[in-house]
Length: 244
Image 1 (cartoon, helix red, strand yellow):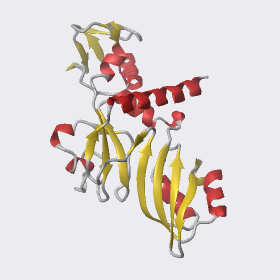
Image 2 (cartoon, rainbow, N blue to C red; image 1 turned 120 degrees about the horizontal axis):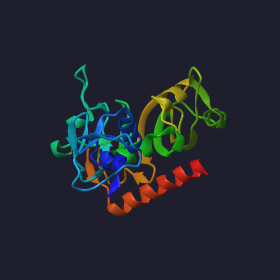
Image 3 (cartoon, rainbow, N blue to C red; image 1 turned 90 degrees about the horizontal axis):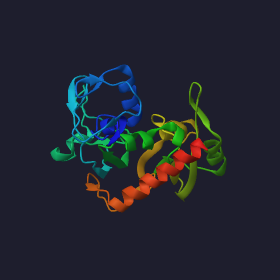
Image 4 (tube, rainbow, N blue to C red; image 1 turned 30 degrees about the vertical axis):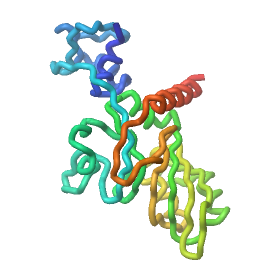
């Protein structure tokens, strides 16, 4: 027996939170009868439909992918641009990314059919850590780092924050490590544009506890079970800290 929302999430259709919304809206049926009860328990032999379409639990899969530059993070693009699914093998194209990287950015994307995990990795309330190496034009100074840390209003009523440390600097450019706990669109690029140091290159090297280490550009590999366990424990701790 398991809760209906967990059963729906295990099909890869959506997260448990979204499943709760589907249940409340009256589009979920168990053995032909509409169920709106939160916490409803289903058995392995029960038939569950969403919008009259039968769903079944799937084996949860977890991969890490090194996104190359020049590809957008989406399934299809109406403008015909190249997407990450032009690189990912056909047998893994049902996997979805936890978050996005823009076309010109490279690095780690966690790919999975676990809707709950994607929701936790991307939900703004959890403030999941993401780490990047960023090369920018010019010499970045201490004053610039303080501005990034204190926050920049990159959109009306939206303030972006970043923790940055200089790795290497010369007369023409600066290499930094940047840590985010937000997920705003093109956040790093907008922040560095604001302080007068446009981004030259941007690479995500870590998302939560998962690192891009061991991957070549364009390569995708399964995440080890022990690493998945560590990741889920990390996310549970963040969730607990938000609820305390």
